Length: 255
Length: 255
Image 1: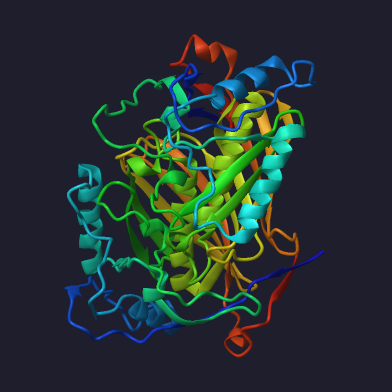
Image 2: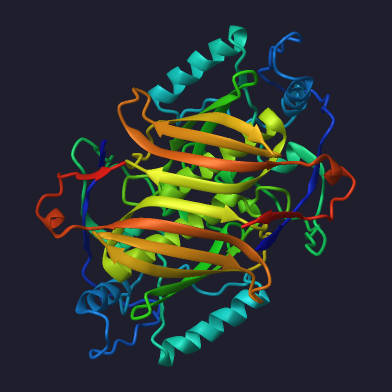
């Protein structure tokens, strides 16, 4: 059976060269094992200077575990090849010039758009998170602290909020590791509930890239690794090269 | 390999008998095929009178498709056994007396808690949804309209926002159909992106109840059924009877 799915073409915006908050930059090694594609994607994804607010920075709501692990990874950005990804309020700030699939018109009104995982604006109430990415290891670590607006069972994060955090971390990782653009599959096994206000560490790996697809895995656990919150796998589809030229095309895949 | 997961005991609150907004009530047939357990769960879940705001009511942001399908299902609540579920800002308003698992303290501060799928307060910006449930068919239909704060790719709902909506619909359905309390598994295949501001109809079925677990499926599609947005399956675990007496116990399951 053939299925049709939306195929879109994405082009990253040029770097903004406006004055603004400093951004932690990747230290790219031109002789490293990973290809120039990832170099280029990362450097465009992490603008050197921008006037956009980076939401992936510490604030007063962060718990001590989150702050200390953030500092630990920040140190690793200086020597170990890790990159701190900036996080703007909308994907539109990361990705511009995205051509729309045929038949799906998007309103151009003055709505304020927000990426789902930055939908709540008060520090600590909703999603607090920061993603670190390692290009050559094709790994990410997401530090995630759910706030009281992400509740499911009283006092604990909604399973759906963790599902969304996993999907978002998969998406950003897949994009940077191999131009993955869309989630095809997401499969989660929940183990323990995450207490609101505490830290969950999401360890994401790109397992393989095959047939234009990226296969990814995630383990979400407590900082001390004693409690596994959930495990998941995800499949993302790459942007086929032809997509740049034929954005209206749709891909085909057996269900 | 043995895994441990949080086991909690939930007790529904007694009906509130305060004056307030009218709530659409189930028309329960005492001679129907479904057990008294579901009758009792539904009647406690849908208080006759409450002063709590029901967020699952039409507002100016609802698109014409959502409004018309809502009216259609509302008619079915009068004769066909469907029930419109109320939706409060927190699960705490639905479920009280939930005992906490050992070792996981929940702060009792004055935080405002919100169920994740009601985290955004402005009409139309975030989640708009209403769930209808049919006790004897063990089915639910969720009308879901994602707002601009639920964005992933520009103009489209984030996959994670749909994942959370599916998880929430599974959870409420599993609770009412068989006292399902926690999501064990959630597996989603994404087919097409949902345009922001449009209606997605989630058709949920309880496939079977076995070994204290509920197996559920969901198809999310456009109103005209011409576009499938995603398909998913989920597994929820029931509340074991012993759990009432030993809330600190954890369940064991082979991974």
